[in-house]
Amino acid sequence: MAGIKIIGLGKSQGDKVVTNDDLAQIVDTSDQWVRAKTGIKSRYFAENKTNEDMAFEAASQAIENAGIDRKEIAMCIVCTFTPDDYTPAVACNVAGRLGLLEQIQAYDINGACSGFIYGCNLANGLLACQQEKYALVIGSEKISPLMDMTDRGTCVLFGDGAGAAVLKYDPAADFVFYAGCAANKEILYCSRQDKAIKMAGQEVYRFAVSKVPECIKAVLDEAGYTDKEIDHFVCHQANERIIDNAARRISKDTDKFFKNLYDYGNTSAASIPIALCEMEEQGLLHAGSKLVCTGFGAGLTYGCMLVTFCPGSGASG
Ligand code: COA
Image (cartoon, rainbow, N blue to C red; front, side, top):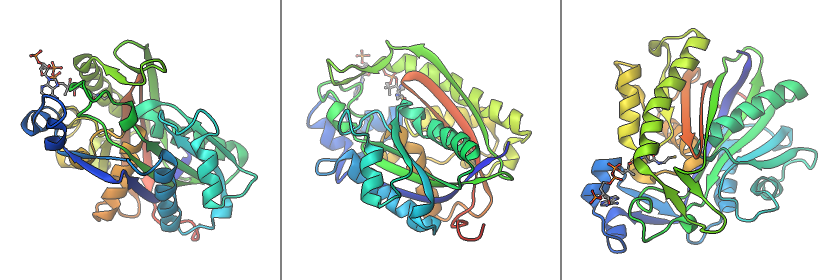
């Protein structure tokens, strides 16, 4: 169970707010349909920002909130399926802009919408092996260029943004991870040839409502906790109905399932760290908050982690 805790959070988003009504000018949809089916009211598109810009902004805020010397960060992992370029990795560019030490590891990983959970688990293992203290894990996505704006089944769902966490290794910290990959390249994908997200919505929906509660139950079982001992459940922000379905199956206290997809849409690997950052800004998190975070997405991947929030505990040990 030994592992990481989150000591600083940050977020960023695209520079243009796009409402459902805006999209209804482009495709045959309506605000009423999108809200009823997904909960989404608006999302941000990054017209004048790159993936790197958003990752940098989120990471800068996370480092400031963590209150650590950035030269102590041992790794920069960016979780993304939408890097600006094939190479260099977004993580290398962000590490350079942040002024991190040259002697770090910096790379991108692609776990789609489960990416941030996978990135945190990767950092946990690496920090433990290498006896290092701090990792920077960023979920950052610029999805808007990969949306088919003639496909109303997908173009209303996604948005651009980034969320970041500074993680501290602590042998006494609770950390539990559970993940899987139900290999499938037909129901949710974006090929290099088409450069547009394709999705069989109902099949993804069925996958999500089965896997999200399964993951949460597995993590609670391994940790030896009941839902009552968890302060917040933070699910990938894809669809309100998926989150509500999981909430009903896991806990009587469904308010513990935070939602902010109304204003962001689905930001893939960024959705969980953006949600965590908003929760902190809204005063929902306190030192020692126990969080269960769950992602699912293309791959088909799924992943869940139990992690503790200990804000700004960098300097104090
Ligand atoms: N506006 C209006 N109508 C729309 C629409 C839109 N944006 N998108 C689809 N429709 C129509 C369809 O064309 C279909 O019309 P028809 O009955 O005349 O053929 C009807 O609505 C129902 O479509 P369907 O795809 O069956 O809707 P749904 O109830 O499955 O809802 C999703 C669609 C995408 C909201 C839902 O399947 C979903 O959320 N799936 C999970 C997606 C997800 O989480 N993806 C991210 C994974 S990381």
